[in-house]
Image (cartoon, rainbow, N blue to C red; front, side):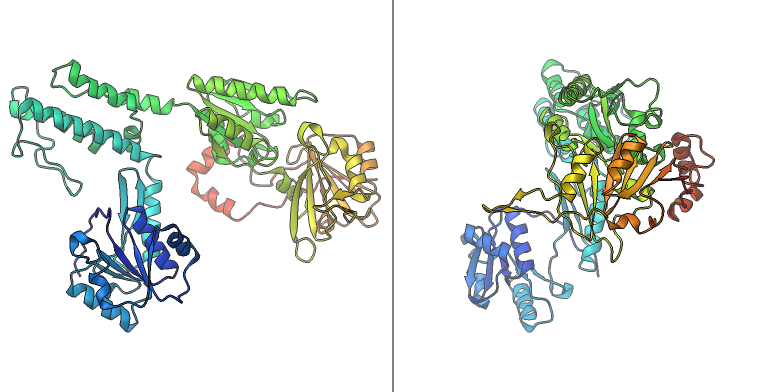
Length: 586
């Protein structure tokens, strides 16, 4: 079969007839309404109507003809200006029924476009999988052979375009229209001398790249239009996307201030420089501590940022990756100064952005896990700078893993809860009730460990939605737990104990922040505490055996990954076993 002719149809005010009331009918109505059409559905009064479609009918966006389809519906339900013939018919019940075949035959006889789901042989048109961005529309079709594949191809193409590229298309269209108007007014050009362009052009005209001399007056008439065609054809899409409204104003202004026939001023070098130096804010997580657990995206952001604002707890090995040329500000957070330090970081970040810098807000763990990442995102977005957010490996899940504690384990723990021990303005948070199959990870809680353990094992009343206080079930004092400090760093320490003895253990062993508390029966899945005393202390972290060998720094590791494909195969086989740390039994 020959390939179908793809067209863009103006459907403003059209009346498509949709046969059926199922989810597909709802989708067809939605697509029709989006392009300005006025869909009508035909379905019996007792038909099951999809809930979204029912809302559209209730709002008056879709008209429901509450009866079975009649042949006369095709020629009586349409617009007056086309003698009441409907503009298109969608059959959503499938192509194997006799009704679908009859409708298709009837539509062909009356030259009405018809689409029958899953029946290409009954269709005279198909809908494309489309990407829309302002005036830019991209449509993909497999001619009914693979709808899912069409959607996949469309997503791949759309993701390769610069963000908001439709705005650039709109701007270039404004320039093209102004050039066309000015050239026709200046040279009294007619249809025979004007450059004719169309989206359907599959190749450039033979004269597109021919040499033009300064004495060629005929060619001079279309010089500006050919200049615009040249940049649309040869400039990178990212460069075209960097054109601003100010650039367009400059181009258009040139027509009123100069009679020069040379192209308007749009310098490629300045556009590329502006794109590279455009102010940008990045919120990135640095992981639990080890530079080896940085994501590649965060490492690239560290190398490319022009200003870095780091949390106080970002470890020194990660900070050492920052180039010497890059200014760094470490948050000056200490008890009683947290809010002031946060305000200082936001102020410094905004000031740097206003100067055109690429600002990296480097956080420990993941930006959105008790990192105030959403607050900072909202702040900078309100100021006109939408942040890029790079996820980090959160210590709430990676620290238990490094300490040989699986947060979930079949028949032991089927849920994980991440809590904070420090609420707003330093207030204590309400303890979670005891659930035997739950592993709870407490962040920012070691400085008030005693009160937290008392709350977990006590009978503190927590008001419910009613008027009677409810007492959550207390945690058994023999519940295993672990304090994990400086996870993945060389001076990592793990204290394994129970809720009954963990406070005494930390008091005797001392504190080594930052750290977290893991509580639950999953703490003893891989480590047997029986007969080993009231607590166990494991000091040090040996790193990931074999993974880091041969690389002195993360930068060398990244270079190795970019040049040695075999390394990626090693990585895909999983992390090697971690060397056992020395034990200290109490």
